Length: 208
Image (tube, one colour):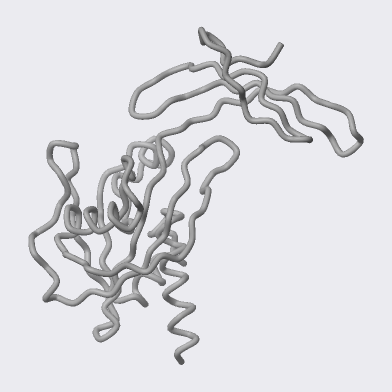
């Protein structure tokens, strides 16, 4: 009998490979995303199969961008509250690059909308870098990374995000070197933001 999704009426083929086969997916909770218990079998290096179980959270793919003004040497970031860091170490806000869920749109389209909603800047062109799984052991989310140029003339609003979505964002403009110092000091602790700041610093080093 072919494996089926737990609780499903119709038989559904689950992902298989010579060394990995999914035997069941059982939804645990649904909200903004879906928490699923995945049962699978994995062939070990000695050739034996092991049966394992993991809980996987899927809240959709997303995109992130860091605007950079090369003439003034500044970047645009968003400061907002995040509950997980607060629960972890009491950090009330996080300083992050602009980001958002794709919600079925292409990453380039979605991130330009987020730049205008969160930061108040209308950016015509973004440069796609790469897509990464940020926590592949337990999260299905894949993030597409962008850099983009901006000038003060690109500002069309105060930004701040969408109140209907509970966003209350403070737009922060600072020198790239200051952002890099904050990374080293642990004051910027969001992984996707650190990656983009590092990319800009590497480019600045190459230009120098």
